[in-house]
Length: 314
Ligand SMILES: Nc1ncnc2c1ncn2[C@@H]1O[C@H](COP(=O)(O)OP(=O)(O)OP(=O)(O)O)[C@@H](O)[C@H]1O
Ligand SMILES: [Mg+2]
Image 1: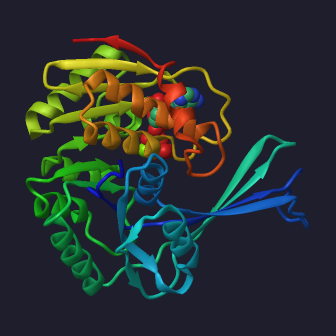
Image 2 (image 1 turned 120 degrees about the horizontal axis):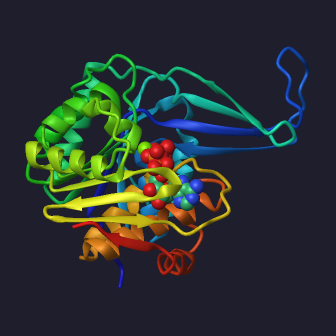
Image 3 (image 1 turned 90 degrees about the vertical axis):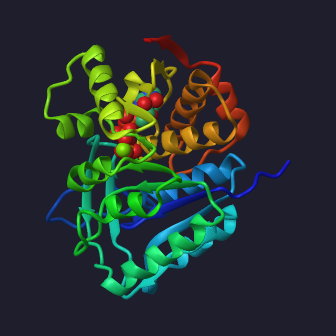
């Protein structure tokens, strides 16, 4: 049965990821590109993309530079993602990754993002208000563009009160939005450490910090991810640790975005905390087994899900 579109993902600072493969890359020399690829990126857009691959329709909003939005339009069309992104003047930033498999190193060159105007920000809030009439899930993911207030996500959390707002960002924008009480947060352990200002050097310390946040700000669900060690899932009195299977990592880019998509897909399907943790972990483990921001097959996600280990901590 076709799923209803219930999810909106918000990407205020998207990027176009260009990956160049250059063996023996040298700065200050002429380098030849062996192969290259270009992907429409940005964390909320990745979440919508993973959901679409799993058969869960989603709407993407946020900002896109009007001058180079074609790669996004193609992605949205290919995956059936509804496009409600505000076009802003200029270009979406490009991130160049030079991957050198001989010297085994990666060099990043990041362009600055374009600043949305106050009118652009207002247009985005108007779209969110309109979508809130029919959608239940709102995923706010990724960094902030230049020139906007660090309260941007906090303002969205307040504007979307009563909706299931999922927050995945870092720094000041994260701290302010957490205080506004989103429904779910998915920091990685470094982001949580920065927020609470404690070392968090054991699973018990991470669990205690997650519980404190949940109680203090009324956050229904807290997920703390820790790369290949897995993730802690906390809801009320329930807590568990989900450990991914050993996989051959092709690219860890998008691991967190895949996890957020898996969490939302699980919630929409009404899965238990343990089954949801299995599915979300399987989304991530499948995503990192391939280059790009795609889940190549639902069957692969399901096979991965059966290999996730769950440890009850409640
Ligand atoms: N090397 C790995 N092997 C298996 N699973 C992994 C690996 N790295 C990440 N994962 C899975 O992906 C989940 C999210 O990864 P991670 O904690 O790195 O997210 P993140 O730091 O938010 O990433 P992002 O940079 O995408 O925001 C982990 O909880 C785990 O289930
Ligand atoms: Mg992350």
